[in-house]
Length: 349
Ligand SMILES: NC(=O)c1ccc[n+]([C@@H]2O[C@H](COP(=O)([O-])OP(=O)(O)OC[C@H]3O[C@@H](n4cnc5c(N)ncnc54)[C@H](OP(=O)(O)O)[C@@H]3O)[C@@H](O)[C@H]2O)c1
Image (tube, rainbow, N blue to C red):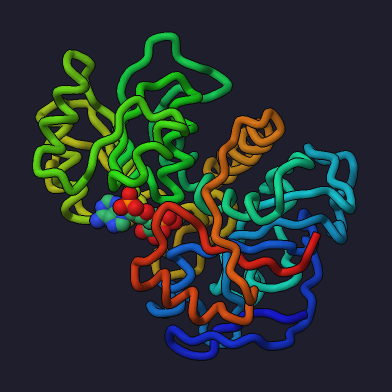
């Protein structure tokens, strides 16, 4: 199969490699579309993976081509050849993990999102990495309502950087859990976020963003935030919105320090949902509770997709498919991807 391979620091090339074989608990997915993430350039640049020769890419959508040894119709989801699915892999990390910028990948059958027939593979390819990250930020280290257990007493949650892919999924999942969703984004993305269910959207560059958010909350105490930017500025502004409240929490998508020590915070790492040691600089062991959460998230996202209740991130399907991956990876590294996903059409459906 043709695959985008790491050939040097920040460098990739299209090469021919072996089609992987699904192991126990895995399926082989025939990929129709693959979406790009910031982690693609980060892993290529920062040397997180085992080195050159690894397949790049995390997000995929396609059909099940082959079942691994013990994957049968008796498993949770009755996996069958031909099922339309989406998900993510820990790409560009180890040869066993593989990557998604290619024609086939192996994936854990319990971590797949089942796709309705009317969702295109291109749109579905945007779900895996970002939506699982949003789920993890919402539910791994705090007890919040869920779309299966909607609260009757809405309280505010702040999703910073709501137009990011992670943010778009966090906004809609929080809203569907019954929460009052406050988010921040550039003005051109405010309508998009309102359509996803945000109750209020503010410009994160506005000098008065903190006072506008606290005024909007009024007597409703803001105790919970998800920071999809996770930089020093976003952390500081969120901390100001929370003020001196105890029992408050910020979920971070990058490992930055929260200086306000009365605020509990965690960096959540989406790969731990896959239930395997990460074998990277963070060196997480397999964490069974995270794996259980990952499987629950796959069920939730499949349910919402089936109900037509999951809005996928706007897509830009790039003209030459994987052949131009080097260009689009660099484009994302330069911060030019805004409120959309770069999507590679791998084959026509
Ligand atoms: N921990 C994990 O496991 C994990 C998993 C996935 C992603 N991540 C990380 O999460 C972050 C978001 O990922 P993503 O894929 O959602 O990103 P993305 O879609 O590429 O994010 C693009 C958006 O970021 C917003 N943005 C850019 N600079 C900003 C700033 N200074 N403050 C606030 N927002 C800003 C922009 O919003 P506007 O257009 O509105 O300006 C832009 O639309 C990345 O850093 C990624 O590496 C972590």
